[in-house]
Image 1: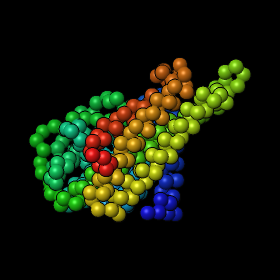
Image 2 (image 1 turned 120 degrees about the vertical axis):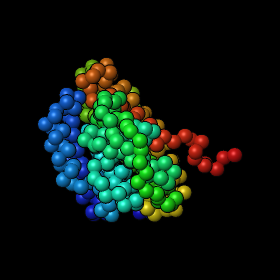
Image 3 (image 1 turned 30 degrees about the vertical axis):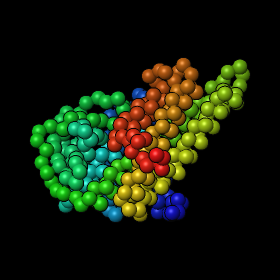
Length: 301
């Protein structure tokens, strides 16, 4: 396995990063800026990134976009539509405008009237109800309504690979969220002064930030392997790689986000500080296709 990104993948990463930096929320107040959100939705639609798998993209490339969107707190549907697109292409469902549902809840529901669900190897569709406020301020949720209708069957291997993709992309979102929270904390540590010095110059703060960086680097390693495994390893191995990544990235992201709040001190616990938005996103991604440690075979009796 070569973990280096190809030139095309690096260009995709740069483009996703630029979009996130230009149109992602720079403050909590920006989350309510409808004009910005409209521009963001339009730009993502123009990129075609929600249908990456239908266009022949690898799991690595979907994860690249998911990671950058997590870093920039991009508050437009991506993960749900991208996973729904991968399901739809396998069953020949060409109806546009679908997101994904997990446990009866449609994720990334804003702007979508239909949600797909994978149960075993059966793909079904249901209507999406009214969008409601969620813990994650950057993503919307809704209940699925009405009677689900079967739209097709996947073979077992395809269903397993889809689950591996779901695990890898949510892990990527967690890695990006951790990276964004860490950058926020580092930037604050450089400008916040105490006793005439920036707080980042003190070992207590510097060590916290260094430990967070180490967690992020470890997360990147397991994520890259999981994303690569989606298309390159046997389905069972891809699932295992995805589960390992989800467990590791979940714990790392929560620690990094909580550390970011701690570095901010008192202001980190206020509504105006973006640190809590990162933590909310991390906690929500954790609950998407959750993995228990017991599900991972670590070779212990």
